[in-house]
Every structure is written in C-alpha cells, then in structure tokens.
Length: 231
Image (cartoon, rainbow, N blue to C red; front, top):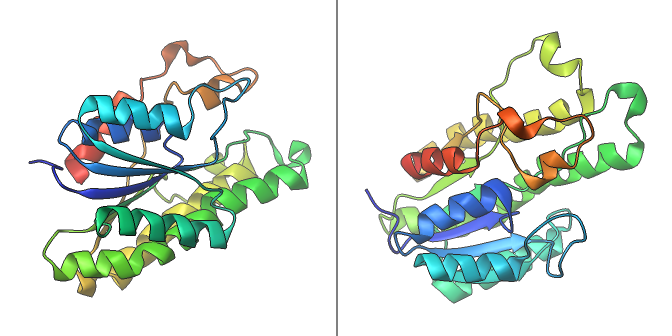
C-alpha cells in the first residue's frame, strides 16, 4: 500500500488536518498541490501554502503551493489546471477546506452563513466538478482515482442541527456531494468517500473558537492515518 507517484490536489492544506494528510502522503513520495488562501502569515493562525510546501518537500514529497479561494470558481479552475499541468494529471482530490462557526441560529450573521455555505458546500461541489476530467483520465489510465471529503455522516436527527444549524447544513452539503458523486462516478471507476472523526480534532482553527476546550481533542494525525488507508 503506497501513495508513491500519486498526484494529489488538496484544498485548505496549509495547516491542521489538511497538512497532516499531505505530510502522510509525502512520506510515500506523492506529488501534492496545496490549494489554500493563506499565502502571507496570518496573525492568529500558523502556516501558509509556502511553509506547508517546505514541510511536504522535507517529508519526501513534491509540493506545489497554489493560492486559491475556493469560493471563486475561476480561481478553482486555474488552480486545478495548474496542478494538472505541473504533475501531468490528478489522481486524488481531497476536499478538506472548511469554514466553521459554532453558533446557534440567532447568533449566526448572514456573512458567516454565506462563508460556510460558500466554502463547505459550494466550494466542495465546484472543486470536485473542476477535477472530474482529470480524475476520469486517471481512471482510464488505471491509476485508481479517488475523491475524499472531510465531512460527517448524514443523520437527520435534531440533536446535530440544534447547536449550530448553519454549520451543520454547510457540512451536510459536503456529505451530500459524497452520496451523489459516489453513485454518479461509479461507472467511471472513481471512488468517493467521506472521513469524519468520532471526537473533536485539535486544530488552530478550533482553538480560536471561544469556549472550546482542546485538551481532550485528538491530534490531526489520527485523521491522516485514516485518510491514508482510504486512499
């Protein structure tokens, strides 16, 4: 089992879970395009696409840092095209980029609602769409292409919606992409799966949310190990 030679496009991989997955793949010598917004250091969050690329190269992979806001379909198309041109194609898409805001309905501003829907649901759909021609070609070449979403299992129980309705809706949009694409792309030989932890994961983004205790969270590496097995 190895990801050696695999051409991977990952969204939001400049830090946290995305970077952990990229570093695990890099150990096998994978080629990894990091498509994320952070090109300049963030005052509160660690890591940029360039520091991520350095870590990936140090781990044994080939890195391509691409600044990309996945709310913009033109930036998505350009980023995917750039990665495919650099690597000669794309075998794996990891839809990791996600916006989080754990507020109830009354305390969720429209701006935050739009951000989560734009990044989580819309961004996942459009990035998957942009990668499809390359993933289909990968299947034709027998390279076992795959799409992986970092999204939860769908459960229509009120307890999952009650605490943070807008966030749950946005993440479930990603999960619905999994269900739809899995059946839609089955005949094309493209695998589609979701990965979601049973417990919270200690990331910089989560630590920024007031009231969240990360002392009992697991590390991003548990997700990267699971993603490696799936891919």
